[in-house]
Image 1: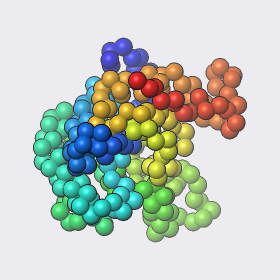
Image 2: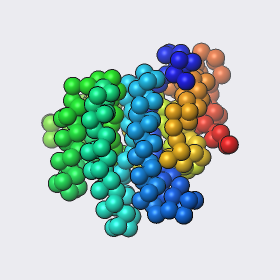
Image 3: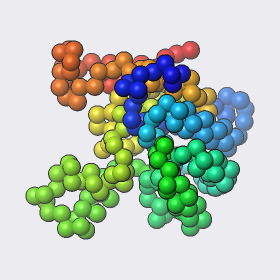
Image 4: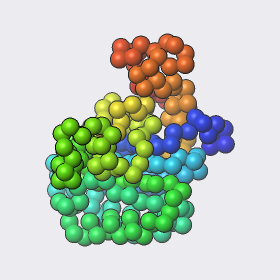
Amino acid sequence: MAASSSSACVPHHVAIVMDGNGRWARQRFMPRGLGHKAGVDSLVEVVRAAANRQIGFLTVFAFSSENWKRPEEEVSGLMSLLLVALSKHLGKLKDDGVRIRIAGDLASVSEKVRTALLEAEAFTVENDRLILTVAFNYGGRWDIVQACQRAIEAGVSSQNLDESTLSRFMTMSYAPDPDLVIRTGGEVRLSNFLLWQSAYAELYFTDCLWPDFDGAELDRALASYARRERRFGDVGESDEGEGAVSGLDGGLAVPERN
């Protein structure tokens, strides 16, 4: 529970790849759309749990730039589900102090979806208890490319373009880099999510399918994070780090199997 964790061990920014909705539905002989609907319910619970644990920033991978390759019926269902979810939960999220930010290329989504997302941002703009970033039509490579384009348009010369400068043009320049990246569903990869920002994030992979991920599962991830020693290339306080050739335990959690 939140009360059992030292605030010093709680990551300021948690990012989540919410994976496993389709497999969750298939295991129950349900349409994939019902898995996505159950995933929305899990997201609402995890947002509440994150706020209660004093996590300041939560970023979720809602729809990637590669997800357009899915069947048209599924993509259409996801867009409709997004609109329904915003209508159903936005008021409660605002009352709970959650501010919604959108990260992604909204130019290529429908006007209806784009308007709903931008209105959600505006509706919660005064909140600061938890910054919930919804990565929608987002890709890490796209983010880096658009940052370079914006830097060029702003007149930044090649001599003045360094990591700090480019970071100011990333789509999530308002947020600190994630301390902890969680991926559910048993896959062990980032899938083009926050590639620039996750350079030194701790990674946590779990077999738990996203619709089954709740506050207790979040606490497992936070407990794993609390056991890590973040070295950022140094040997760390334990003097056991080996830099780039260190063991996987420094940044990769072994999934806890039930």
